[in-house]
View 1 (cartoon, rainbow over the protein chains, first blue to last red):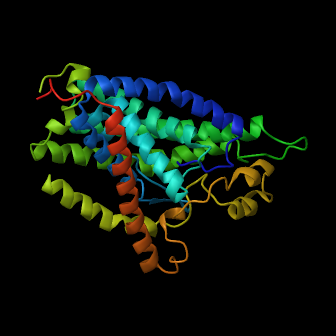
View 2 (cartoon, rainbow over the protein chains, first blue to last red; view 1 turned 30 degrees about the horizontal axis):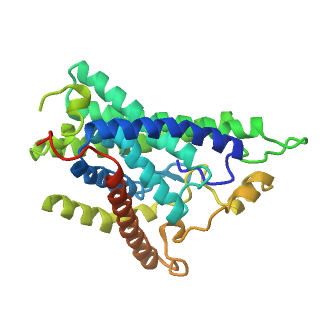
Length: 230
Length: 105
């Protein structure tokens, strides 16, 4: 889901980058309110976890690959704002050092994977918690929704490119496939395989943390945010 | 904490499994692949595709990616480098964000 450079027009990159500025500003404010300085290393662990989990490419029928992101897991453990910062750092390192996702496209990639994914995932998780569903099942379904929402956002950003930016004779200037190809391709990969991997990873980690009596980690930072008592 | 460290090391050592999946992710092709697929390289794509040369492209060590063993070493190395840089970034961030010690004991 890491959009490389050259795939999005500079103006699209600028719009997506601009969209991330207020997100990160509010995220910093929220983290300042809910985290103590000694808690920041937990955000680093979340970031490192997301970074590593994204290296596990899974094959998608049709010869392409996808991967889990861990966004909803981070949102449950760190709160969605803390997750947003952690994921943005992971994406920044991926683009700068490993060429995974463009530098110009960092705003778009962060918007999809560090904003849409954790917030949609967390929203669905919280909704299911309100409906008294178990933590494991809520986290898994939230994760499935979160990564698919991010994939949809990425496919729309890509698919809009040939519509908006093309030469007089109709050749694409940037990403060449339109929405009718980008949305099904991305969504089939994520609805069938990557979403299930994300759900399984998230559900298993939450299950393990509860089972190991470490479920404190699941709300140590966010109980203040959502008023849950430990 | 010890358990977490062991889990982290196991995950890092397992990352080369991710190399086994064939092909690129949809929408993450190189310029040559795009040319094969649509018959031309879009102008803007050509222009912006290599804005910055990554130090370890595709989580590999340049020139040390001839076979699965070398790629695996590159992958594990990349995971360690990535995690180390993340730790440094958050060390710096911790100077700037978070409340000072206190109420949360």
